[in-house]
Length: 357
DNA sequence: AAATCGGGGAC
DNA sequence: GTCCCAGATTT
Image (cartoon, rainbow, N blue to C red; front, top):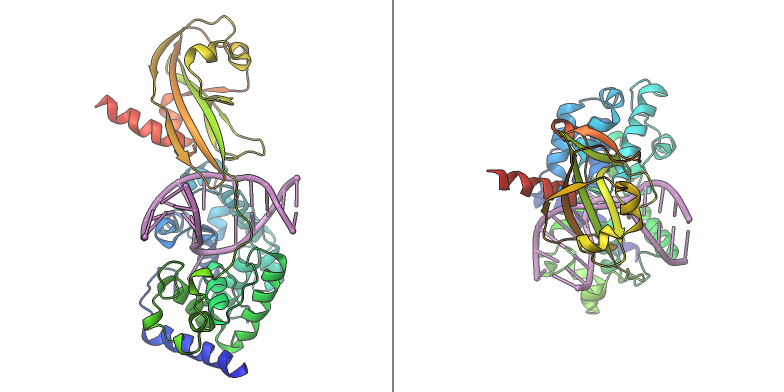
């Protein structure tokens, strides 16, 4: 047992030195701010998807203090399209905490790091090890997969017991004097060799002692217990144009896309046509007796999210007088690019622009 | 303990 | 369609 553990750690470090060809701009980075920024962006996000966002943020905000000074709307606009927008809100709160409480100097203590908004067990270990060479083992999707396979552990990784079991094991495997190199090794190894589908077992430096391989469990490990439910939702967006202005508002509920903006939105339990919506209570409240002209009705478009399928339709309307008082604000068409919108809306705006040419 | 929070790429 | 990605937070 102890033998196979030593083998695991030694082989991974060796693989990292000899065969790890994965390159990323934050690899070997020493600035804890940049390390932290990369980790926040990469939460539940593929490296290729997060990379351009990392570059943008480093350019706009080279230090935590610069980020802390930025207006929230500007930061959200830069985050637009990346998803999981609570990360953006928490990131800004953490930057401001660093700027004030820590006078711009990133805290170098694990508990202080983990106490920052948006930093959980994984990100705290990553920043502590990569930024300060502290002996904390990271536990991300790659680590779960590599450990569950190498040791043939079938405890569900999304259970409380699994989190503790894999977390303890990862920490025991960590060579305290090489925490950064080791953490980097396991994650790269999981991404490049011990992949979710079709892992490269024949070229794997651990295959000789991999328990899942010996027991032919590669394709069933790691085990996940929960299966997700996907709901269908129907969003009817109204681009109501009044002179050169459009009605928008910031989303504030517990729903998706918190802190992003939207046009006038009426959700219906089923797909709806304009004639259905005219009879809709929310629609009647909004428009009252205001006459409107229908400029355009888009084809239905679908967006697949993790927990829901969103069917969207866009109705472009023009009014010659303002709507009765409501929750929305009138903003100039030219300033729309200052606000962050969800992908379903930016995709529509993109298409609309193309149609004009 | 379970539910939620986005968007995209690979299959 | 399904899975899952350098997870965290709320309920």
